[in-house]
Length: 276
Image (cartoon, rainbow, N blue to C red):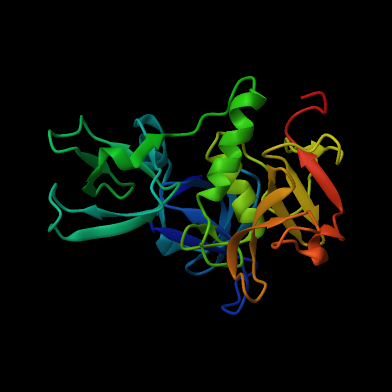
């Protein structure tokens, strides 16, 4: 059985204990597979990218029919960092909810002359956002073109600059290092492993320092960054003085060089074979 996330941000916890750490975060409109009820009100789920954890049942719309209806609708994602969904097509209308980049909604009809798009939500509510805030739901590229995908991944990662560090987070309201790497690829149709390591069965494979290129991933102990080229990388860090998504350098002469990271690289990963 499947379900649809029906809150702006759905925490995924490591256990049913109320003190358990958040290990992941699901965004509005994403679908999950239900594996069972752990305790009343808490469900064990598996994501489309094979991550498991515990969520509140109240954060989901349950039921096979609702899920099938949702998948049949034309769906789009919110491309802007954060936007309100309003009850009517005017700026002073009541706010239904507030969504973040990557949230999935279903457009209803065409935008009106003022650019307002009516959208359907998983719980059958409807609301309005400006059509310009929406983008096509990312589709997996049949044959990824490095000339297109590499800069797109880098730009997606830079779109989170300034976001606070949030353990397990995946939104502009808070994001962690592997969440940043994941979303940078997900927004371009590629699902990589959620944690800060390469994992068999996922598309990122080891590469060399010599072959490292824009959009590749740099791995450190318990950490991952998106490479921007010219020795620079973007990452989400909890280090005092940064506390969020920043750009640093591998160049010891650069003012934003971080020796603790540059000297502890464990691996480098790429979606593309070294010849690219």
